[in-house]
Structure formats: structure tokens, C-alpha cells
Image (cartoon, rainbow, N blue to C red; front, top):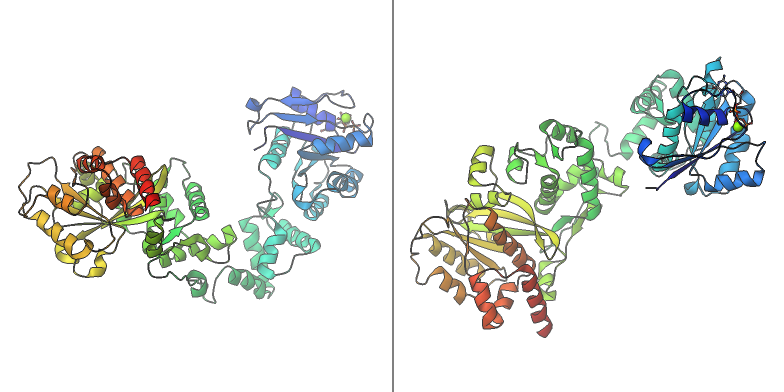
Length: 584
Ligand code: GTP
Ligand code: MG
């Protein structure tokens, strides 16, 4: 945003420019004024937008045309003042003032203009009838105000509009010509646009605001089209936005084809995160950083069904009330894009992604990553989302481990209640970058039957230290599915706060890991969620760098001791990994 704002007042002699400035400053109408007021600076802390503002007067009786041009070049916004009772001062707006202000500028560089109708205290009829066609003719006119220096009416509003025109300009956001081209493939003539707005303005009380159609104005206009047999106009708009004859979004629009080759995954790109974040902020009306049930309902009000089930609140981070945070919301979108990309694309369609982001189709929101095989060959990945399977016998504590990833202790979990889901997702830092890690719990006994169930970026094999049979299960799964694969594995010993049972397996878990060149089992206790964060970091790290276990353990015996004893820090691990890769 700009550091300051320069507002210049121009207009025919005697319309009241100097009086307006003096009235603003002294808050009373000055009977006698000089031809030209001194430049005024309003400090930032008293202006509505908190930006220092300079107000500059102009008087033809004191200044040359060159001096005027000079001031125009320096101005950020120009108020063209006219006298509401003097038609000739209005006629000069299109014939003299606007061309003078913007004749040399490209469309996108035009200085915004505000039309100011002064002396409304003497007014017979409104000047709007004459002003609206002028506003329609020149897109750089942001708005118009009628005011009175004498009655002090609308004076501060006028300067507020001027500030706003500089700080929040309409031009880049809204261009009637471009929108028209989008729907009808040809531009709307200035005259036609003007006629349209005049009709709406005459027939509605709230159809036009700030020179644009309001929702009511738009609905009125379409009603008019339909009443006059011009249905095709309304249909053209509806079809362009993806609606079919039953007023349902078409399949072509909702489900554009997206090819995801085997071995590749799907993620949201940066622009999509911005789009989703803006949407969150729009619906978070009380600005508290979470979506209340009502706010969430409103966000999805454009959907024919509610896309999220009750398990969502146990899948991502929420506040203590169970309301979804911005972080949790973005995590959930990431989750959907990764595991169910076609629904994700459909949802973006309901949210008007293509229109708002000016994209051909929702597929532009998705990045299809490089195949995993290639990533492994190259020894690096661009991916931001990784899938971890948490595998272990029933009752091991997998759900507690998944919930602890959302920062929830056992006590909090029982308090929150709600439907549980086999997934949780959160972010983990790898080398100062946030990466998404999805945990998916899998029961060894019931679900782990097919080899394809083993596919993931990292396997977290979990056994219960209080159950002597438990490690044997995990060792079996490891040998059957992972020993020969390139999926990295991490063993986790759960219920670490309870007394340990000797595991009924030939060798101890630590020896087993050593033999298979894996780091020693990590200890997890759901009563101590703080210390478990290193396990999640480790899972994400080996998911991103699958050869890490191998790399660390092939290094010197010093590293061996470090990795078997505790976790190696992320930074060291990465540095080591890079060094090893370089020397290969
Ligand atoms: P130049 O400096 O000559 O360009 O004129 P100006 O636009 O600065 O006008 P100025 O402020 O000198 O006002 C011109 C006359 O209009 C003065 O007599 C003012 O008292 C009178 N005037 C200004 N504003 C109002 C108003 O809101 N209502 C009424 N009734 N008279 C006004
Ligand atoms: Mg003056």
C-alpha cells in the first residue's frame, strides 16, 4: 500500500473547492475564503485508513495550466468538483476535466476520479440524471458524492472515498468490459452499458452501487430479460458458468479429466492455497481464525450436499471446541487433493474456482507430481505431501498415535468425542519447510491382506511393549512387505510409560532393527504427546529421503551409535545424506 495519499481538487471556478477543504479542516462553513487553500496534510492517525493524506486545492485565478498539469501528474486521485445547480459545471466534466486528467495515460494507469457535486443545500433536483451517463462513459470514475460545504454534509465521506479510491482501487478487480467479453465473446458498447445501468437505476432502489450492479440489480436485470423474451441472454451467462438445462452444474464442468499416472501423487499448488485461504477468511466473519458450525455451513452453502463428514474434526487440527482452524482447513483440502482428487476438483467447481482464479478448468488447481520411481532414482523429490501407514495389531495404540499428531492427549481425545477416522493429517518441518504428513492406521489382523495395502511413503510399524506377542506381528509384516522394498520403515514401541514385557521373538526389537539397518524403535506414550513430535519428524524425513536409514547406518560407527541411541537431528541427517549422495 502507498505510504501517503495526494488528493487534488479541480473543477470550474466558484464551485466551492476551497470552501470544501476549509469546511473539512475547521468543521464549519467559512463565509470568506481565499482563492486557493494552502496544501493540507492530515496525519495518518486521524484518517480512516491510517495513511497520511495531502489535500491540494486548485484555482484558475492563481495557477497556470502548466502548474495544473504539474499537480495532476503528482496526484493519486482527483476530485472533480461541480455545482449541482450549474449544468455548465457538469458539462465541463466530460468535455474538459476527464480528458485533461487522463488523456495521456494507458487504461491501467489512469488516475481514479471522484465526482463531487457541491452546494447540495441549494439543490432543486438531483444531478444524478446528468452524472450517471458520465460515470458510465469513463471507467476511471470510481464514484460520485453530492455534498455541501455549507451544511457540512458528506464532507468527510468525500475525502474517505478519495482515500479508498487510491488504497483499494476498483479497476484491477472489476472491469465491466472484460466480464462481458467472458460471457458473450464480444465487448459491450459504452452506450449499451450506460443504458443497462440507467434502466436498473430507474427501476430499483438498490440495484446500482458505486457505479456497479448489485446482486439485486443483477437479478432485476435478468428478470427483465426473461419478461421481455430475451431468455438467451440469461442462459448464455448460466451456461458460461457451467449450468445445464436443469440448472445443475454440468458433468463437463464439475469433472474435467485429470490424468494421474501410476506412481504419481496429486497436490494443491500455491495459488490454490491462496484461493482457499481467502475463502476461509471471507467466511470467518468474526475473524477468530476458526470456522464455527454456522460459518462452515455458509462456506459450503453453494454445494448440493455437505462435503465433509463428522470425522473431519478428528482428522485435522481444531480448537478446543472442535471448530476447524485455518491450518486444519488447509490440511483437509490437502488430504482430499491427495487421496480423492476427483472430489477435490468437483468441490473447487462448486466454489467457483475457475471464475475467481480465471482458469480454464479446476485441474489448474492441482499439481501432479513426478513418479516416485524417478524421485528415487534422482535421490530427491519436489513433493510436499507424504503418506505414512501406521501398522500394528489391534489395541496397540495406533489411534492414540494418530490423534497425538493433532496435539491431542488421551484425556482430550475422550473429551472431544465425535466420529473417528483412520486418518490424520498435519504439517511437519523438514529443513525449515512445512511438509504435509498423512497418517493412515491399518490393522494387521483385518486389513493387511493384500500386498497393495503396503504401498506408502513410509511404514510406521507399531508394537505394544506390554504385549509379548506384539513385536512378532510387526517383524512378520516387515519381512513380508517391506524388507525387500524401498519403502523406509520406522519401528515404534507404544505404551512406553507402562512396564515392558519381554517380546516373544528370537531377538530383541533393538537387535532386530540393528540387523536390518533400521534405527532403534522410538518410544511413544500417549500421556506424553510433547516428546512424540520427534517421531513424526522422523517419519516425514524418511518419507522425503527414503535412503536415509541406509545412508546413516553405512556411515561411521559414530553415526551408528548416534542413530541407534537417539534420533539424529534433521539438519545433520540431511547434510550427511547429501554428502553421501555426492560421494556415491
Ligand atoms: P475558485 O477558487 O475560484 O476556483 O473557486 P472555488 O471552487 O474555490 O469556490 P469557493 O470555495 O471560493 O466558493 C465559491 C462560492 O460558493 C463562495 O461564495 C462560497 O461561499 C460558496 N459556496 C461554497 N460551497 C458552498 C455550499 O456548499 N453551499 C452554498 N450555498 N454555497 C457555497
Ligand atoms: Mg478556490
